Image (cartoon, rainbow, N blue to C red; front, side, top):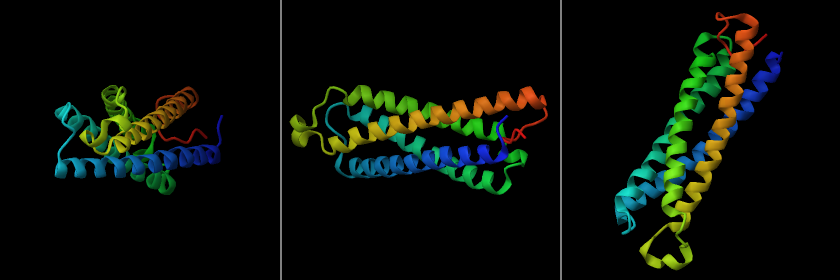
Length: 170
């Protein structure tokens, strides 16, 4: 059975990493949306780039906001039901789904594009590919976080039954 200290340290590391990567994705996607809104999206698949980059912007805002709330809240009131397993699982699952959709769809769009050969027709090509990379990293970290939370849920349920609902298993 994991100790309270081990859970607190694991939570801090996972959510700190999630928060850091989400902030980076937020900055990149916000800069891209601002740039493309001002100068226009790439001429090929204009609507496709608009939707995909904005999905990643929403995913990064969502994950950043809930990452801050859950990290600070868990550190201050970890034993309170408001920062239990279910309040962690729902926003992390939604963030994971948003990132998975955005990352996969943007990857499919820019996979065959060579930024060196695109020239001026695709401004910020390298930044878009960087957004794809950081989005996949955040998707993987969110998956690891989900596995951590689900494992804790099963451990807590097996030991305490239905009534224990915080992340602390002891």
